[in-house]
Image 1: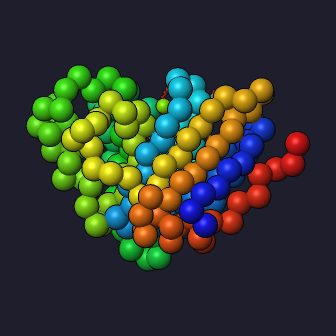
Image 2 (image 1 turned 30 degrees about the vertical axis):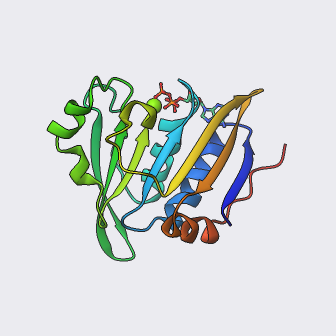
Length: 162
Ligand SMILES: Nc1ncnc2c1ncn2[C@@H]1O[C@H](COP(=O)(O)OP(=O)(O)OP(=O)(O)O)[C@@H](O)[C@H]1O
Ligand SMILES: [Mg+2]
């Protein structure tokens, strides 16, 4: 599956998608989250991290730009770095902070506002597009690499019916 669309009627549905994504995470994955302010990018990331076993808070890294977490996937500790690049001011800021080094074969990087990181941001394996639609959200997932395809192929998610 290279492509997947669903309607998330409420935040609970977003949380269920986050949990479904948590089940298919693999080290090395980079996920871009696209969508306007309030589209649900942080809500999805929070659900994903909690489903992956993180028990603490997940706050939006609005000012720090990045927040690291550690989860256990298949018995192995994996760093998940949650970025919010909305307030990123320059490419130098990203590079000087050493953010690029986080994008490697071992970590999982989840990036809100990837548009702000171009052109220094490494390419994604998965694109998630969130859009407000009625009371809920439309979501589209796109695989952009073999690793991304591997994840989407294994994704099992049935959006709650309307
Ligand atoms: N499927 C859904 N239907 C309706 N509301 C939802 C849904 N999913 C999440 N929400 C709500 O939408 C809001 C999303 O806020 P969130 O902080 O996740 O947005 P964001 O995309 O990260 O925004 P920002 O760009 O400001 O970081 C929350 O109030 C959440 O409860
Ligand atoms: Mg956010």
